[in-house]
Image 1: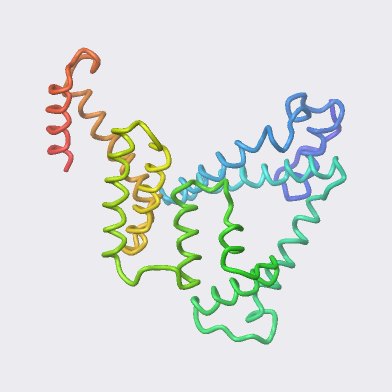
Image 2: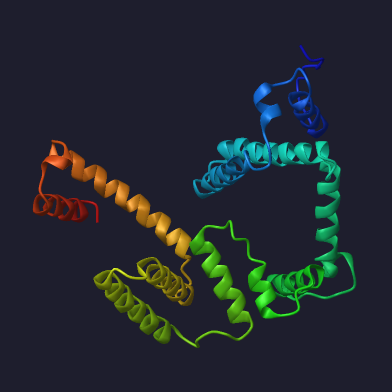
Length: 261
């Protein structure tokens, strides 16, 4: 049994202590066995769950999910500290220095006109901080672990800031149609299907940007719509769907679509 004082209300130092005890000899065998790589999926999952709570405006759940995200930060920091890489204090120091450096309009003498001016100042300071000398450098800095649609939108946005973009949606729509035809050809020829599908999705994100529609959010809503309609199809069928032929399934889908429009 480790030595720990139960408290009525815990604070940041308590969380750090708890993690230290979990990872220490005599602590939790599972926690002691973890590495940065093994808990990487947990970081992503907790971040998505926090985002889901934000989308649902569920403040009670958001409080819990933010705690889970913080736990992952503390967990990774503890593993790093044990390896002699950095500590949680170093994480805090780094983010504080970043905030001060990237807000010269708050902590320095620079001026920023409104939210867009502040964002432009942030981006300029970020490029200096990261040593990004070209537009391609800014694209290369976009995290590869992002959901692909989100990453595509960010890449296109940074390219657009560098002047690499169409002036309106019409050429983007033409490109989308072009990529669809290329995908059809790839399917017929059983060649380069993955590449052409990727090009089609990338082009669809571009159209969405011109319409000021986030591709990731749009696809998430499409997923929810599919679940609702699929559930209704099951209800209407009254029997396992694999017992029905395609025309019957299509008829049920059409009915569900009309009912849930």
